[in-house]
Image 1 (tube, rainbow, N blue to C red):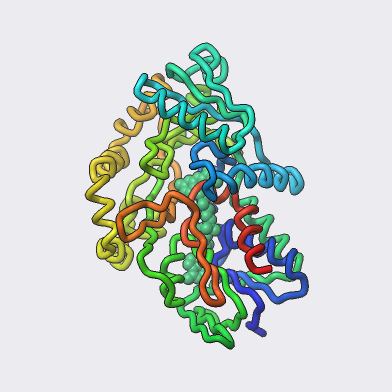
Image 2 (cartoon, rainbow, N blue to C red):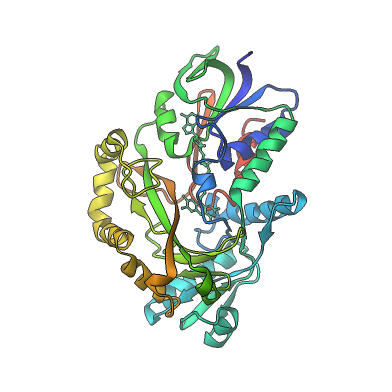
Length: 397
Ligand SMILES: Cc1cc2nc3c(=O)[nH]c(=O)nc-3n(C[C@H](O)[C@H](O)[C@H](O)COP(=O)(O)OP(=O)(O)OC[C@H]3O[C@@H](n4cnc5c(N)ncnc54)[C@H](O)[C@@H]3O)c2cc1C
């Protein structure tokens, strides 16, 4: 098999696949491949998320997250419609349950308007009860354009379209080494050596390691945060109609445990955000010496831990104690009980941390010789995937 390519994309998640899709359209006739270490695509973040088509209320105006989320949500809806992928623009409410949260709610309204999110409305108790009869709150932000879909199904469609345009998807092909010179680049994999003119690193939870394989920037590390879900038992699903969120703590890039209706059926509660001791560790007991040591020896980790150890401890407590998890949910829906919750799946977020201990707030994409590294694309990157892919490929044309 000829393993010489014009462009190679490392990672078959939704961002790598969206980038490949844009590339096969833009560079027709060029040899383009995706290298994926697993036996199928979309196994990690892309296949383990909440499935929300975010609207763009959370992100700082002018940031990449803000611009890409608003444009990305519109592109995602159009894509799902065109390719018959199930989606539902069901709307969501972000709910303040105490006076102290009202300023946070106003800030979300301000950001949403600045980002061009349509249809936002600050609503009172009566309207909130019409939308979500079992939800408690003193005020809420209604975001009618938020939707739900199945990102694994979206990614499979991207892959099908990439292959239909001549792109190759090589699975069980883990990148283990990268050698670059001004004349060529050789990517060592668990299959064979691959030659490429240019490569784009979309390796998600391992994007920092791939960066280091290429000898590129230190000072940034992926810290894995597991998000655990419960599912509401069938008899109690009527407690939630669509999506109910708390007012998130603006210091963290996570949204707080919330309720999400799944496009495939059922209502999930979660995800929390606990530090994972294994990058692809989906169970509480998963542990990797290499991953844990890598986190513990990164100076930024201890700086972050010193600042946020109290919130982190709370997340662990709620992770290990179902009643505490239920209590967090009862702020939003008082009738929900621990007995209404059954353990569901989990996902691990690839969140970049810098060596000063700051969690990167925005998407981060950097260019080096013959390579682009997609270093930080946590949520809402599934929503924004088509626009992220477009922007990356535009920089190459
Ligand atoms: C719990 C959770 C909830 C979320 N909810 C939402 C949501 O509701 N809406 C939203 O928009 N976003 C959400 N997100 C974020 C979204 O899922 C991610 O931003 C998105 O999936 C990132 O895609 P990716 O392609 O970068 O990463 P991934 O899907 O993780 O793909 C990376 C791929 O790279 C491969 N890889 C890694 N190393 C190598 C190597 N050395 N060689 C070859 N291949 C390699 C991996 O196997 C993997 O397939 C959520 C994420 C989580 C974890």
